[in-house]
Length: 106
Image 1 (tube, rainbow, N blue to C red):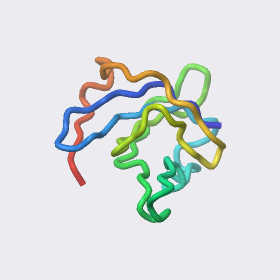
Image 2: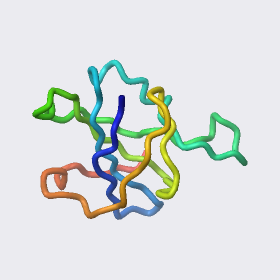
Image 3: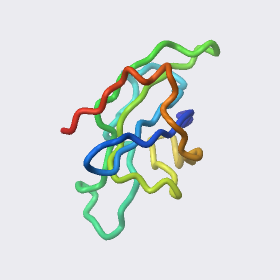
């Protein structure tokens, strides 16, 4: 299971969000390239996927925690993942504990 814990817009030249997730299992067990948001008018290989995935400290409940950047996210639609469709919370400002994570364009 994957749960989106936070969704945070990032100041950049193009639309990008920082997404924080909790994972049942290990960080390395996730196929990050399979997390996407379908864009029906585009071929699948053009769909956006996580960028610059980073493992964070394990949550108190034992779940793994990670962050990644995601370009051109439609915040009204869920992410499609190997764990199923995952709804997105409302966007908020980047919290202090994640402020050190800096976006660098690919």
